[in-house]
Length: 251
Image (cartoon, rainbow, N blue to C red; front, top):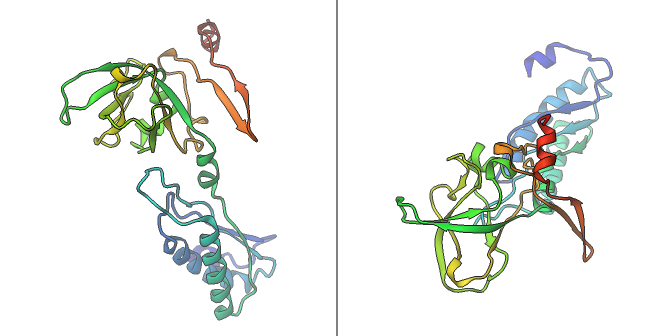
């Protein structure tokens, strides 16, 4: 802050921009940094009257796990606007325009990733959980599963009302031992394979970052992409065939 203030008058300064964190779970996590930023905003305006906007960056959290409940966007905005107004009034400074960059909050709920279960494997492990093998790769399609051990809300697409469920872990189709989802060492409850014809599972809220960071690990293809809107389903991207994957690598 002192470094900024020492700059004095800054040509064409109009926005004070900061980022605080990601996946902020409580509203107070936005309010405290904003009050501090508004104090700096007030001081900067003394020599920079053109400064009229505060960009708060990102941070709005997505409750990826079923049991977690965060704030709504409406509630968060109400708290931010009210607190910003009160703080500015106390500082005797003009109310700024407010900008937020809640990309994850907007993008994550826009996508669901669905896998078909190919097989069941029994391997000795601490929880004695069964392994279900999916027709894709977490390291390709849901990279945060491996990179930051992201927990997801996972539900069966079909057989949702089946009462007999097994504690399972999920394995990707690549040759990599890290290509797996164990819900942080816990388990996922899914219908028993021997009592279903075909089982599909859905990973919810996968719209943020996963596609942009996707790869072709072990030369596996990108999944089929469908867009569901207003009761209609359209194909946005067909699943690649081996020849198309090969061309990506110059074969």
